[in-house]
Length: 263
Figure 1 (tube, rainbow, N blue to C red):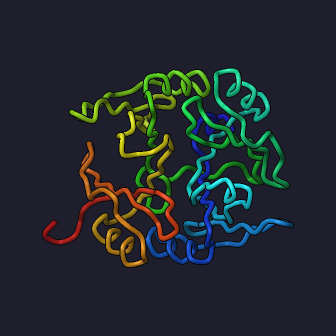
Figure 2 (cartoon, rainbow, N blue to C red; figure 1 turned 120 degrees about the horizontal axis):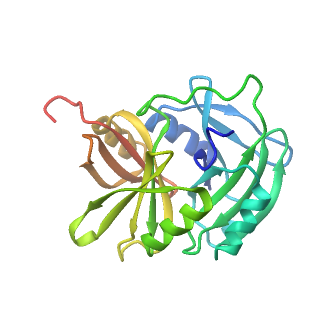
């Protein structure tokens, strides 16, 4: 648990068509699936080999009635969900789903930061045999980056720094778009945050999943009925990214090499 504390450890898609989503992400990212349903809730794990890396479930009816669109949400590991939820509230955030247990999985709470970007606090139960070794950076199918579209990234960094101990890392000048601020855990950059463009209607977390070939991924994204909203774009370090929308409207992103002949 100590190695995972204050890190994103899980990613969950809440959508209006789980059957289509399983087929779509299986094609686009290369994920397998495994049923993990519980009484009164259907749930499917997305897997890389035998390892679960994310999940998909139906968008709750209450959320649909409130107009919430399909979306991805990230789980951040904490030692004590109840204490962390209270801390979110004390720092000006909101607790949307109070702390509760997931049988045989762990304890969670759905919250948002003071600028209304939503995430989940999570304390997993101890795993039999211990935690698996983390994959190498860039391993296909795993999450490779985390990006916050904020109203004010400096205030957001203060919040997440106080909540999780995230550290300010390199800042990248994006010209008219302002500063792209990297943040780190234990000195390792795991994501970035910046002030959202006016064209983006709300704050949110965007998650990047690793693929082998970004150009081949473009073909899969569009061939399955999704959209490439931005990219391919080269980012520092030589990787390429695309930002996408799946057929049900959930935003996600992919990161990988550009290895197609002639690219």
